[in-house]
Length: 439
Image (tube, rainbow, N blue to C red):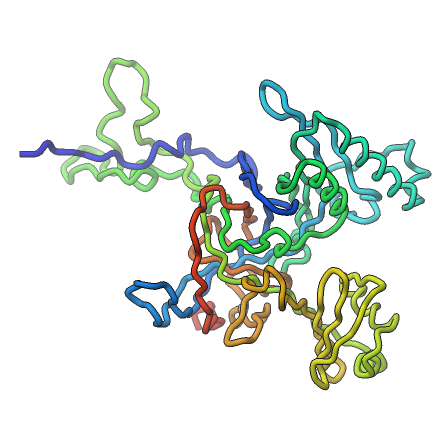
């Protein structure tokens, strides 16, 4: 007869089960990547869950060529603001910070940061603050010095979230976090860091052509819980004296202390958890809709790119370069072709819709489409909005499966550290936006 085996209850791999130090999860390692320099992480806010219907294109699958249902999580990902660069030097104990460079005119260009930390007043730069050209020159000199410094081994960007751009977040206080800049050599990374310093970075700039990410978040807190719920141990017999929801013994007389492996009551939930290789089902770019003057609409209809047309973009936080061309799609739609990105404009009476076009780009494969039509914020938002969150107003990403934490929780992304393999394309045929209110 085989020996009776009693498996332990609960994993000791996550001990001690205490509350996370911060609502902002942290990554202790970053993968090495090839290609051009880029940010290796991002952050967003969990909106809620819904489901998709996709065509199963996986070969030898039991549901091959059939429609299957996928549970998914929708995460709103407004742009991140790069507020500083941190340069690290290698020591025997590990890397330590050697120098940091902050964006120009923080108190003017990013006033919300004062809600999170005190911005030091440098009296020696009062005259320079008034002159942006002088600040730019200072940054160029700083970049040259750092490029020629052989001790610089790693560069990370200090980024801040912009929660006021999200639909379901009422806070205006940004969260700060460090994200590694990877790819290329150290010179290219430094140049890229100074290029994005003080600017907004979007999720698609981080994602690139990859289809999986690692996700880290703080789980839903459940407070102080007892032995049974916290560790899943067995109830005491019916005839046990006084209590049943307790463990039988705390341990032997010797050693005369309680071992850390003994299940006891305590904090449950609000722990940091990282999930690997989460599939990105779709990226949903923002479509900005606003009311415009009839004259501006007429100018758009006349296919001319004038100051008023550029004003439409600048009023909606979209910058255009001097070299802009316009291409007609049909009577009410045009394509604005810029040096950096391509935008699609659609005019309906006095309303103007601006969306970013990803046709022909490396990242076009991940932009959500249903039967040839691009997904938008209102096509993935349930009727009545997500429970305890509301409406999606900015960029969003759809992740396969569940994600730790309740709605509104800050979610961090990272390039995958354990992924090797291929991800088949699963065309989306339906996105559920039925009401989650129970009606």
